[in-house]
Image (cartoon, rainbow, N blue to C red):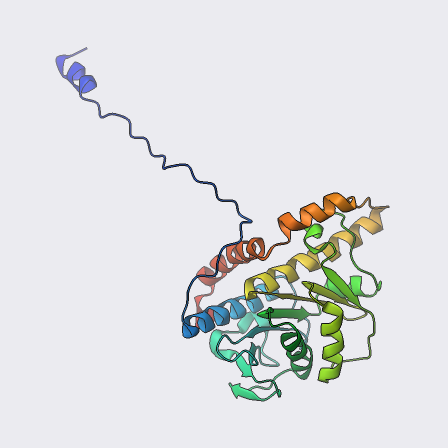
Length: 276
């Protein structure tokens, strides 16, 4: 070994510890909503709403002209933002969204607005001041499950997000075109996060756009899962005590928001025009 080699060994830099102080932070922890101005909160809801429509298109929740997601306006709580009828979910941008008042009149945007969207969502937003967003489309597995006229069983950990937290609306009378019908749906929903509309489809509601949208994706998946399980044999549900505990772990809006944001971030990176 040369003199130079020996000198290099003797002057080697000490190893740096790259760790920071230990912290405890789990994915399902609920966090306080960041402080935002009214304009900032409105923009946040609009961006997530436009993103939710595009995500729904990716999941195939874009059957014909059916389907709508709404977001309550933070400044005018009896107004909500919604998609215009006839514009495909995959093309929706922030600037396309309509602001509709409690009378079904468009106060921002050109429209038209889906009459069923107004009839259902206006009633839900009125009955549930805690609901910021509600989602309903004619998704394949949600529709298929709705024909059975029953709620879901707690067959999996994921399905427990809806355990004793979703209802059945079993009084289908055709296309929902008036707020009286919407009020009956809102009454069936009660204080829960979701309702199965018999012979129609599924609907979710939440304290954020992120939660309502993710819960819709998760509910359709739960419908799909139970349909497959029942077709294969006799499913074995999770016992009540365990299902109830699991619901408190996986059914919270904080976890739903994290799940949504993980999809939304990649969507914006690929399709930044949705923010226009």
